[in-house]
Image 1 (spheres, protein in one colour):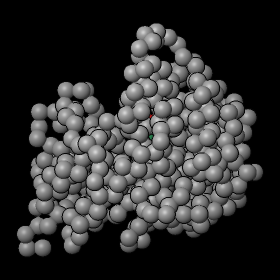
Image 2 (cartoon, helix red, strand yellow; image 1 turned 30 degrees about the vertical axis):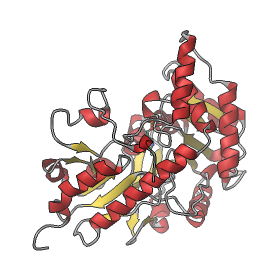
Image 3 (cartoon, protein in one colour; image 1 turned 60 degrees about the horizontal axis):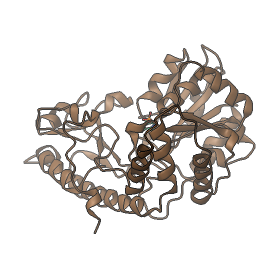
Length: 381
Ligand SMILES: Cc1ncc(COP(=O)(O)O)c(C=O)c1O
């Protein structure tokens, strides 16, 4: 049994990006990756307390926040990170774009695996880099790599691998073997690896342990940029507080140079919320994972025997659906017509697929699945 903290909260008329998309229409929004839950009580209390002070001036990243992240990384991932490595950012997407600009030169190439969170596909072009994509493979119950294909796609101009770990949208927490293989490839081709680990505390399968890519090998750590944020785990995306961890001083200086004069500092409440989240006692987080596991099980049941194929995610609150049997190009309107709004696979580089965000109260998901039934289980199929 979970507490009322994960019950329905009406988000209409709160300028919510997720809910405004279908304003005035009876469509349940299960698209953009934020959850319909209030942030943990400890986070809300810390924001309230700071607000009492009343002065909302320019704010440095608090030393106590840096200490909290260092301690969290030690305790949760066995990863020893250093205060010098930190670069605070108002968003992780900026981190992806900055990584593309900070590595190599215009005309170089950036490699990534599809389907993938859309900014991975846009950032290289915005940085005047060539985008090289290699498809992940549907292996039946899970998605995995074709390492031979990945390596064959690397050109002499390829400088950077953008890795999503755990992976949005296919829900994989990459195994040690997969990570070690990626490390070997990156080493062989002298690539920098930018690892977006924003979903790393949303591991749903029992016994999973997050391995930061940068912690695989101390020497190779100098060729890594790790992007982290409290925003997915503790549901704080509207506060814009993320960080890049860059162990190599020269790479970090280059990254900072690309930021200069353009990237604003994190807002005061972003820092306050982040520290409270990283220092929270873990109970809210454990309850959240329970809710997400219940939702994931509901999804698995609802899709069993359907002509549509849902890959059960190991991690994240996002599920990836092969809906090509409905429409190989764009099945989304058929779901919207039934009152459910999903993310369009074309944005992830995979037409005919959809992403479903199950970070919502179980009752909301049940309602959405009920509405989707005619597509999940067409009469006569
Ligand atoms: C893999 C990944 N990276 C980055 C982001 C967004 O990060 P931010 O809101 O900090 O820019 C998301 C949000 O869905 C994501 O899934």
